[in-house]
Amino acid sequence: MEGARRAATLTHRLLAFSRQQPLSPEPVDANKLVAGMSELLRHTLSGTIRLETVLGGGLWRCNVDPNQLENVIVNLAVNARDAMPNGGRLTIETQNAHLDDRYVARNVGLVPGQYVLVAVTDTGTGMSDEVIEKAFDPFFTTKEIGKGTGLGLSQVYGFVKQSGGHVKIYSEVGLGTTVKIYLPRHTGEEDEATASAQPAGADGGLELILVVEDDESVRRVTLDAVQELGYRTLEADGATEALRLLDMHPEIALLFTDIVMPEIDGRNLADEAMRRRPGLKVVFTTGYTRNAVVHNGVLDAGVRLLTKPFTLDELSAKLREALDEG
Image (cartoon, rainbow, N blue to C red; front, side, top):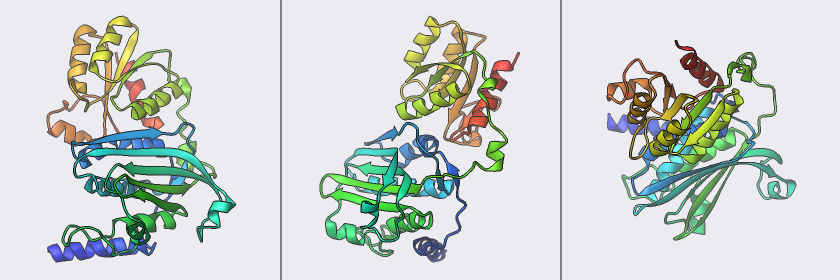
């Protein structure tokens, strides 16, 4: 069974390297995708590795298969974790990028133009120039026998090339590695389902919403989304600050809080907030599924929960539903 499983995995990754895996590209907001992965990535990394996200403002949408892009980011995070056995820092950054004729001339098959950049940087052991040259080969690996197939980066390469993009590795031994993924900017019309369900700011009233999230980049994206819906906002990076703001601003109508936070988690924050303010409405958010948080006793079955990554439509509906409840 183990041999069959490994053979199936090998076949899948070889298909990825040869650009033959089926993809379902669509317009994707890479900021929201990365923000929604923060909890998953923290659990993928060891406790000695700090995760940072730097999300670019005004980021274009990219045309890509979102599920495969998530797989690629997790793949790179695992590689980074293995390169930092003694701990370190993993940074995921997004920004708009323009690849000009001069750059393209040095990279066969690449088209000049506008791209969305997703960069993954670690402070690990780094790679020599010789290793970088072979990094995308399907069977090359620096790991010990039995510790991996060596197909991780080749799978990244296959996916990015099949998506019409570009991938580049920058690394120095002893300093760390950056993998830069350039994905084509989406320039067409939004798909019909997206266009027909514009969550206009009219859905939001003048209610004041307190957003609580310990990850600064995720908090910023969430605030932008809530404000786009027409609501006023306050922000806090944890429970202590949130409770202080609740005491200072009796007009706060809703608490929108992440569940997993250091020191005091979202559930305990909500319990204390509602003790102080019995009429306060609460919506929780998390990267875990509803079944997972309910099964593990983190939340009760009936609470309002919005799982990451969520769309603007989903956020609009959940906030309005909570606020309109009698």
